[in-house]
Amino acid sequence: MGNYYYLVPTLPALKSDMTSYMTMEEFLNLCKGYLSKKDFEILSHATLNGSDEVKGNHFIKEFSHFRSMVDQALIEERAKKLGLNDDIYVNKGEKENRIREIVKKAVYSKDPLEGEKIILNLYWDFLEKETGLGHYFDLTFLISYALRLQILSRLSVFTVEKGNEEFSKLFGTLKEEIFR
Image (cartoon, rainbow, N blue to C red):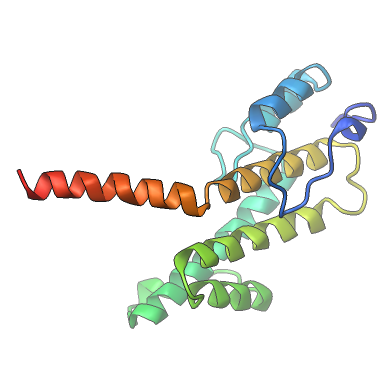
């Protein structure tokens, strides 16, 4: 695994409430000249949703495991909220109280958008914590940076204007279907 002492200091710091930041495409273009072919391949396939194309990277495995715990907690909590008591909804995997409490807060939040933001902040916190000590100039830092850029990108679509635009588009399509 390479050390990227010249690349990392050129990257702007990321904060979860940023509205202006580089795109993933810009980030990958910047990284391309600094990373080994293998590291660039790993970085370019790192996604919030996980990827079967990335094998053997310890940090991506950790994040995938964390994400899996969050997903299982979400399934269980949503089932409870809907009154579904089937055994298939019970989280039989590894559990963390911190995850369960945050997921519960997200599921019972005032609206789905707020719940989504809570979950994305949970991922952000994990990424910052896991790349804190000892990962300042390596591939783990760059993967974390890429995933945080993806979170910022996801959060940027949550605007009133875009929401109203999408609602109008969907409602317009629905009206057309009804009145045919």
